[in-house]
Amino acid sequence: MRIVLILPLAALLMSGFAYFSVDSSQHGFLRSPLNGGGASPGMTGAPTESNCTQCHSGSVQNGDTENVLTILSGATPVNSYVPGQQYTVNLLMSSNPTKRGFQSTALTATNTMAGGFTGQAGNTSINGGTKKYANHTSGSNTSVSAPSWTWTWTAPAAGAGPVTFYVATNKTNNNGNDNGDMIYLSQHVIQEESNNGVFDGAEQTLQLIKITDESITLQVPKSIGQVNGITIFNATGKMVASIPYLKVINNEIVIERTSHIESGLFFISMSISNSLYTKKIVLQ
Image (tube, rainbow, N blue to C red; front, side, top):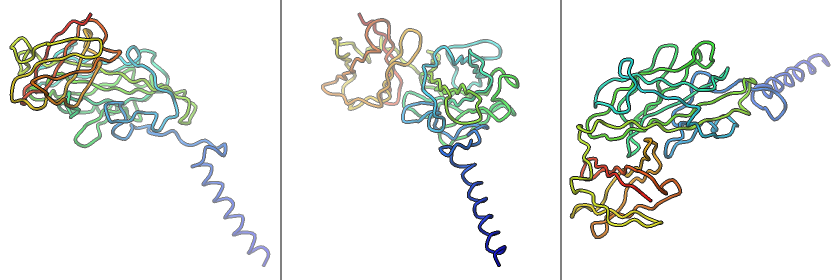
């Protein structure tokens, strides 16, 4: 009878140990690394999205130099797109870590999906719903198997305007756990070719009224109650501000200046009556 009682107790203790060894790192046991074959959607650091620190307990870094994203037409890098055309997107990490991962999406100024993604077998996979995300695969998360990631981007229809690729990469410390990693976030803007439905402010649609240290005031056409998808890019094409919409008051909109809009050349884009307009301004 004693043997019958001891065996179930031993089995219970062993099952408890197995549970903690898999699921509880605070007890000193290692968990399997997460997302070896790609993250769940929405981890790029884009507006309203999270980033890789949702699962990895690392710190967020500026990825402007770490994340090298190139958009190619054939073998030629481009900085503007033709609506509906297919392009090859190439992403690499300049430090080429031994273990790494990424997720990227491409959004318009109104934070909607810009075109579509197609993955490359064994190198990149695509997930998501209305927004699509390119991810590493379980075979492309080491520098040995793949020095870079590649996927196909089909550009959006005419009038979509500037497209921002949001990128989150993960430089892991390869310790078999999900802590101590470095997450690099970056944004990469490609413009729509100017003869495809994007109108410059020189057509009198947008007039610069006033610039102060606190704001930029622009005049817009009468009968317009609201402008949408306001984005501001600096001279290098990096987005420095994104505003979902602004109410028009007395035919004017007022854009608040932040520390990223202090001086230099800037391009302000916005949607007015379903057309995209841009205004080039120089701030002192």
